[in-house]
Image (cartoon, rainbow, N blue to C red; front, side, top):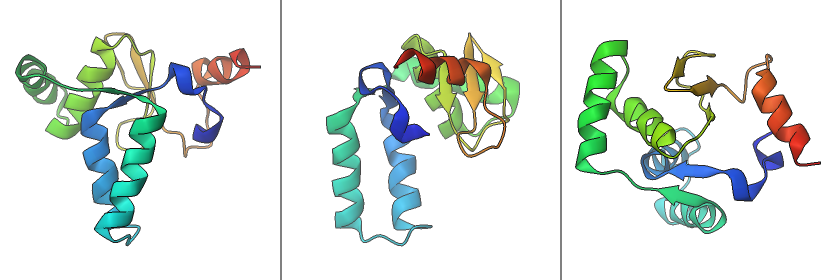
Length: 123
């Protein structure tokens, strides 16, 4: 499903690239050089949204208020700041909404109607 997303409408939070590296070198067992190539490929394909100290401070509040991991809160905050409507993640509760961003697990059987419309709009 992720491969079907229109490249020009995808924003990749910089913090998510750290998570990707962790998964690729840990769970997937890639050597660091292969993980680097994969991450650089993603950053060449999508807009990468960085974060600031102010974003980190806001993410601390978000993590505290909603019992989230700080890394997840930072990704969600950056998505909201970049006017994203969907955040694809398997780490959050499916359907969690904050500041208009809906969290969708792309690996779940249930597909959010907004994601379905998003994919249909590309045709």
